[in-house]
Amino acid sequence: MGKRFYFVVVVFVAALCCGQITRGQATGSFLGTVTDKSGSAVSGAKVTVTSQTTGVSRDTVTDDAGHYAMNLLPVSVYTVRVEFQGFQSAESKDVKLQVDEQRELDFALSPASVSSSP
Figure (cartoon, rainbow, N blue to C red):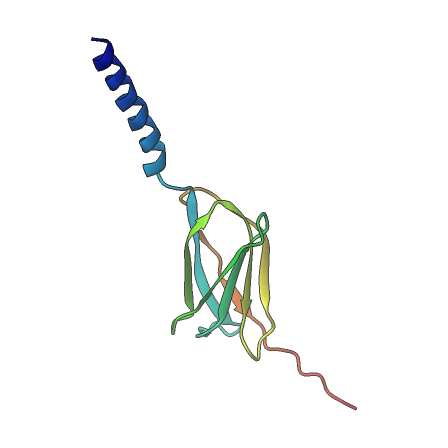
């Protein structure tokens, strides 16, 4: 009975440990639309998501309808930045992403200011 008891205990402990591993990581996602000030979609805009905790960043590009999605991001506080040639960049700082959250962030880009030379 002694060996059988220890075997059952070892299997039980192993099952508990594996349960923690298979549960997955705490992640969330950002999604949204990038438009210009007139409301037209901005296709090909670069969207960069940077963790303010770790400094790690990921990029994506908007599709033809101006939509972007950044999935499987670790829970953290982020800065989300959008850039597109001919427009001023836009940024949201201190955006907290929770477990299983799909955080929607839309951006409206303004045309880049043209400086006139005297």
